[in-house]
Amino acid sequence: MFHFVRLFAAQVGWTPQDYGRSLIMMHAASRIRYSTDPIKVVARDFGYAKQATFNRAFTQHHGVAPVRWRAQAQAVISPVSGDGVRLETVPALRCFARRYLGPRELTGAQWADFVPRLPPDLRDRPRIGFAYDDPRVTPPGRIRHDCAVVVGDGLDLPEEMAEDGFEVLVSPAGLWAVVDVGRREIANGYRAVLDGWFQRRPDYALEGDPHLERYGKASGGEDVVSVSLRVRPVEEDGSWNMPVVVPVTRV
Image (cartoon, rainbow, N blue to C red; front, side):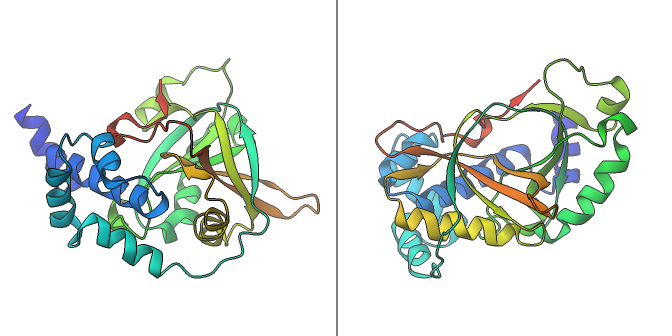
């Protein structure tokens, strides 16, 4: 265990325990920003039996209390139309994926590294990005992004790919808010859903990560990315709780 902790801290810069607490606080901040759930409910869902204990931990991490965080976040939301966002039922997607860390500006470079690592017969498979973190909350160096190709159920992960850092991911099936954007406009796609569509649709709540970025072609042949965020009707119980139990199946 000591050897693992030392290696983890050398690689990530934090101990596993501190890193886990940081993830909890970053995910809690996003939920507070994009939901109307009471703070005591958010605290409970992220493992805190007492709201006061959660408030202290949140304030220590973010420098501001949860209630004030929500007020400040909602006050700075810029008007966005949210036009073009649609609700879509997306099935579970089984993928071969590889994890990358770094600011969202490096997404293009991450894909440029990912594709040549694929066997030639997989390079034409549908491509999906798994996004987990809100750049407005998460430090740039800790933003997680999985580059992936959809492979279906009949293909096992080759040993040489596993040795190169690939793993099998299965995205959660469910209802998603989706908007199609150009490859250089992914950030605007997230804004259209989070800062536009959600402001007009208080009957829906944001579910936990991952968010999906599905790459494809528009009818005219141009590249398009379907930015997809999982949602639920507000009257239904959510599955967004401890981020260590993310709704992604790793096989």
